[in-house]
Length: 169
Image (tube, rainbow, N blue to C red; front, side, top):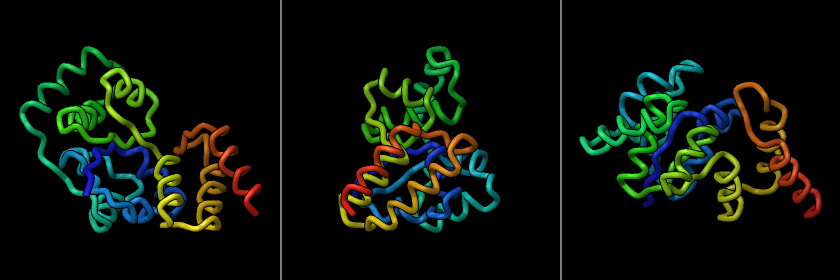
């Protein structure tokens, strides 16, 4: 099982479209710092508990991750403390970072950390046969409908995937 360090943005996306359980169909163990689970997964109410029920694993950060996250503070001033911690966990443990946050994605690229986001999860779910085209279409349509609020995904990428589905039909 592959571990993935996560921030909150992707979980908010899946929660908004009422498909929070979908990423857990993949052969990944999603981890997040214990403090971030308690402090960041407050909205919508019960999100943290629901994610842990699905399989999110709260972890303690190592001293190395703590100090790396501290160093990231001066390097990446737009990142929250928990974003820096998620990045430090991914960097130190040499695992994927799950995020849709633009500033965090840019920092991860600079730190040579592999990233995956909401659309990447959906792509993998479909390619591995965990969802069919109808479920994928529903997810993409819901993401598109809710885009611009709490969901902030590239509209062109959603549209491209929807167009590809139409070609298949």
